[in-house]
Length: 301
Image 1 (cartoon, rainbow, N blue to C red):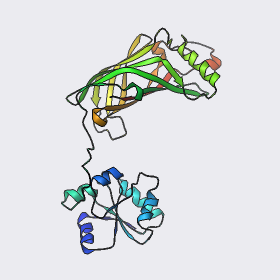
Image 2 (image 1 turned 45 degrees about the vertical axis):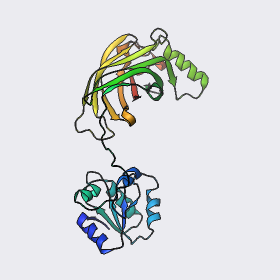
Image 3 (image 1 turned 90 degrees about the vertical axis):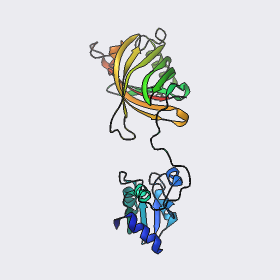
């Protein structure tokens, strides 16, 4: 049976010396930062969660108290569902999680420093770490798709007063790679095709570039979803068009910045016209979708 228990009730159980198993369902780094005295750690996000719990107790009649960071998260509820499904009968969730427990004044074991949940972007010009950044592309037709990468060769992100105020990214079009064709001859043929004038004319236009015009915060964004809305100029084959892109941008370690952005473009607007059904007739097997899907991964130094 799954019940809610208040912080006051749990503290009384501990004071009375009741036999209970208190389980912190958060990742180890949060558990190690601070946890309820006597609590054991079994991270609900780990595949071996149930194994870890059963290392704590195999008694299906044992009294178990699960807690999360707060009532805004459902980690303890999810853990309770998993334990109930394998036969544990006395499952309790701590209302308010460790946030309410500590906020109410009950004791915690502080093992390490408090983890900063939302570090701020650090001011300055952040050069892009090209070796850890890339553009992934996907092109399709009605029968199949091909996908690959293009290397980032330069760029930077500028931050002022904790806000992104400028930036640019340069792509090396000579580095186009395909990642799905295992046959080397077919792979090489496709790369020659993409680098040729049929597509990106990489010899004549060896670089593409994105220049940031505007960057705004998306209010209410949750972790793992786009938290910024970017407008900028994409220059490809010396044709420049404005694009609007949702992006995830987060502070990294030692003041770095990490960003991910997924977006589609109509390649014909940049003069990439091979196999376009709106420009040619009777293409047969040579028909290629006008839309190219792009996913950009950026890390700064």
